[in-house]
Amino acid sequence: MTLLQEVPVAFVFFFLAHTFEIIVPNNPVVGIAGKSVILPCHISPALSAVDMEITWSRNSELIYGYSSGAEKIDDQHWKGRVGLFTDELHNGNVSLRLQDVRVSDLGSYTCNSFFLSFLGFGEEPHLFLDSTPGNKIKLKCESQGWFPKPVLRWATVMGQDLTTRADTTENEDKVSLVGVSSTLWVTERDRHGVICVIHHSETKSIGILLFLLAAVYLFKKSKGMCHLLIAHVTLDPETAHSRLVVSADGRFVREQYKDQNVPDTPLRFDTWHFVLGRESFTSGQHYWEVDVKERSNWMLGVVSESAQRKGRVSLKPQSGYWIVRLNSDELTALTNSETTLRLRAIPQKVRVYLDCDKGRLSFYSVEDCWHIYTFNGGITGKLYPLFEPGFCMFSWGSVHFLVITVPYLTF
Image 1 (cartoon, helix red, strand yellow):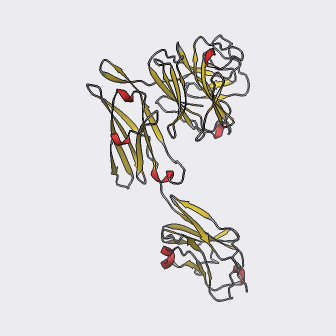
Image 2 (image 1 turned 135 degrees about the vertical axis):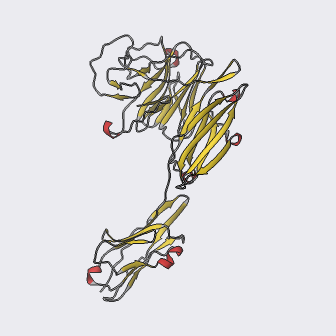
């Protein structure tokens, strides 16, 4: 009889920084009834398969599994007849030995191997502010529950790396998860903002960032002490266009796609689908973050209290609007002639930083601390955060809307 092992495609897998292929014969494998036959399968380059999960299937049905030294054979047809060369696994040999070949064994066999890796996603970083007399204060950033060991990085919101100034330590709990703690002394020169970022180091080696958490502390010098300035922004339903629905707690907004029965007051936008924050700012430095993931378009920025809200007003600085817009994967600053912005990646969370004293408005991607754009000068008066949620790429029920207690908004 003839036993066929069909191998039209080589599979490619990733294990952190390693790439490997499954190598199988180009020609059918011939077996003799009642005898044993080997179905060759090797990993290239020759990585150890001892810690891999290995599966063999025939005609797309699983016949054999191997993981952490344990075999899995569910069908009585194969029990006692199939197995690996376990002493050869360290050389990348994952060939299957099939004994007592039968006519019913005829078919197309597939070899599959992949690593069983474990990633511990740590908790959200906790940041502590320890004010001291003088011109310095101490920030502490901590997070527990990581595996493998994470990378912790400090930076300014302008992208300057501060990690070498920090004192960072690690600890391991009873189940081998890693905790990390770092302290950083900051001064007046860091007043524009300091970021603590924690992520898995291995994921960056293949260009995939699995986990990133950032928190920003902004400082303003006053009477010899540094003070934390955070804008606790909530949405004002009285300003929302009639097609926008604002949550009861003012933390997120969505597009209704049809007009609601709401009063048409002077505060409410009637053409642009905008909603403003309840809070306004005239001085100091403030920031807020907005979750814009799974949105194909949106607008963020600030608007002057005196700006026109009715009709299709021009969304330019001379009209009292300072806005960055995403539209069909194109990011634009709505300057007088509009400015197309370079994208490293579509932002999932956007940080908006307003410095009223300098008339400056900046936008950053939270994931990678990428500076998106800054409006410089002329941003004065009573200013309100502005939001336009755009359209969701998924249905309402399939989108996760995260709300946390720090200044953070979700569309």
